[in-house]
Image (cartoon, rainbow, N blue to C red; front, side, top):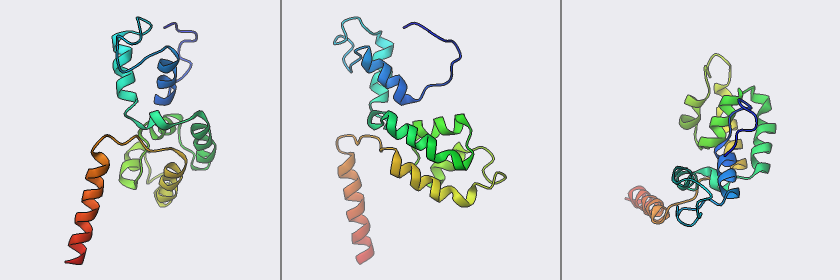
Length: 144
């Protein structure tokens, strides 16, 4: 890997994943045939389990454009894209001094925009079954 411009800015997880894919990274360190280091394969393994796996440049650009009205810092936008919060309790700690900046009343709107624009992380095998079982248990409890 060669640094072209030092301190050009922080990268989203999607951009790192995209770079690793372009270099031939896979979950199998031997499958890359020396094109990437074992540590890069470990980073790849981690990132394919996050929301970055399903993101596109278009979705990130749209989020960046539409989030302009909230006057978020670059770091806050980066963290929102990387973490992809889907509720107010998840997004609240990402936004610094939320109460004093007057963003607390529009947090639900911001969360809805994030959920609408940025795709969720991939589900792990068995995770979807757990979610369905939890929903069925909750319905059973409501009926009783």
